[in-house]
Length: 466
Image 1 (cartoon, rainbow, N blue to C red):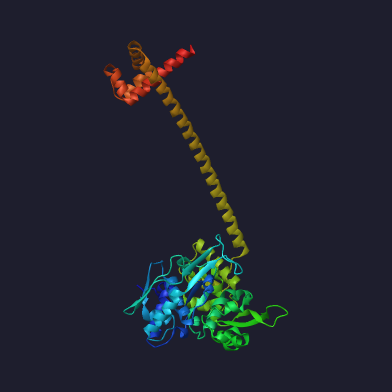
Image 2 (cartoon, one colour):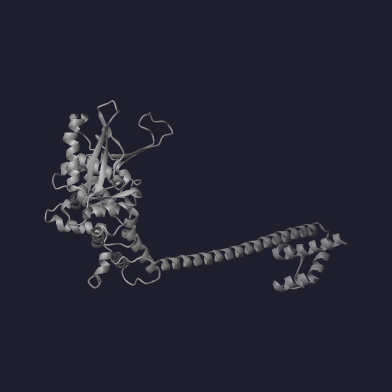
């Protein structure tokens, strides 16, 4: 079956399956993830860039764990994968399990913290302060690794809103902790072209432990900052430069830095650029399930296939889908719409608007009719309830009067009721003979008692009217 329909099988390939396939192809050859010829990554929530005081290896450990969490079809209590696969995702080539455990320990000690307390004052009782461990339990046994992540973080990993594309192929290529830390921090700011001003003392906390000379700017620049910037520009998908400024116009102490950012003109950068437009990326990935090959084609043509052209192709494909004119693969139709620059004409757009208005009008008309019908039914039901309540009250008063009457009056009420048209109809419906009806039978039969009470109330009402 799979051989007969290879296109359908490819369309169902998930990022998780693709990563596993790459691992199987490359691991036996001793090839690391940073040398992969296909992109591996996920949409990472912007707030995970707030992680500080973490070394390079621990960052890779966390990236691998979160990639696995992001690719699972459903959230689970624990994640269990082959240890070699996990090590390949984090580009850990050593067989030193003791060192790997140390890295896991560092990752477990890292936390994400959210607070609204300003840095220039002490915390107050009404301030918000939340701190969550970035990864929980980690277990390694017989070639497998198991781990869990706090349940409050799972939605932010699996379905991020404000996010950016993190390429594991690029992120695992870094050899300098500060380079990786800067890269993480600036990714959400790439579309804007620059970051805000950042305090140097704050930036010095990003990569974890640094030497004593790092507190002196000229040494920090020479030994850490410049090498980190060079590595980012050499191996990543962005070009980065920076500006600095002093504490004040009268001071010579450099205390702030701002990064200037630009995407490179490469297929990897184009892929990441597309992923920055998270809404478009999610539509192409989730709604149309584009394959890696199709994403690569979009990347290769991104200079002409801009966001507007992609959105036009999406709109056109949806229009044809709704009209039942796409018979095979929606993703293939979308790619053809992109290649041939198909778009909806103004006449088609007007037609859709008119049809939408007509449908809206008919829907509103049907809703209004249903509302009127419901109102009428409620009104009738309300009147029925009022009538039933009134008749029950009348019967109650009639039964009370009957109970208070003497024996002669009771016999007269019963005789008159049994002889009346109403009494005869009740007896006929209940298949009873008038000759067999006694006072005891009436009082112990709720329906007979109710109708007798109605009859007695009617006689009382007639007497009052006279």
